[in-house]
Length: 284
Image 1 (spheres, rainbow, N blue to C red):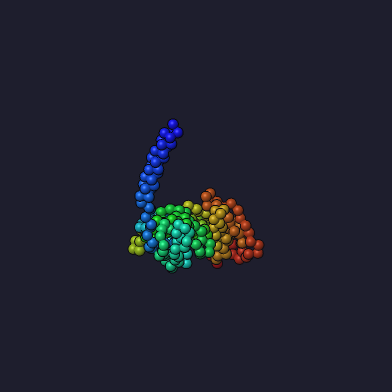
Image 2 (image 1 turned 90 degrees about the vertical axis):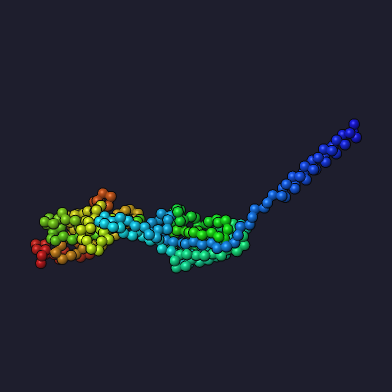
């Protein structure tokens, strides 16, 4: 019985060994993943003015009058460093963007590669991801990869495609009780207002105003400023011949809420000036 058992175990063992040999051969016969080719990696680093994740180079807006007007063009950013690393973390090439923001990186070794963007201009930050923008760390299969772009934003220079513009208007006489006291003293209208026509005056329409403040609300103003965080417009009183001050008098700074089209506060700069108008006759 022991001899039979030993022979049986020997037969089973030989069968298992043959199976393992077969599995080993099958494992070695699998093709290894092909090495990715080295080559050229290229793209552009640009200032994404409207933070839409797209490199805008030819966008237009319809005018309120006729024709169209060009939107902001996203310009390239120079001196940004672009570096390629292989799968082992070994640097395989580096390039610096040109004045147009373009770069070409010749990667050595074999891919895939990790691409890192560094050395941004002061104040710039990574922009929103979109069609032409990913993260500051990218992965490409090999060296023949193009359009590896990056959009950066400068928060202080952000601007939407069709921003609101504001300007002061002047009316003759006493701004509070005079005959022109309800005339516009401040207009706000979209950037796309107007026309691109150089021949027809009829194609120019009056801007579609979103904010209109009257002479008896702010009087004559000149210096305008906008606070992005609070979304308030500041208008400073202006000493102008033939036109009076508003209710805040000389040195007034009016705080305007564009959303409600109203003056929400008034500051006064002490001793800014004195009212030298002849209030009995603004024509003199």
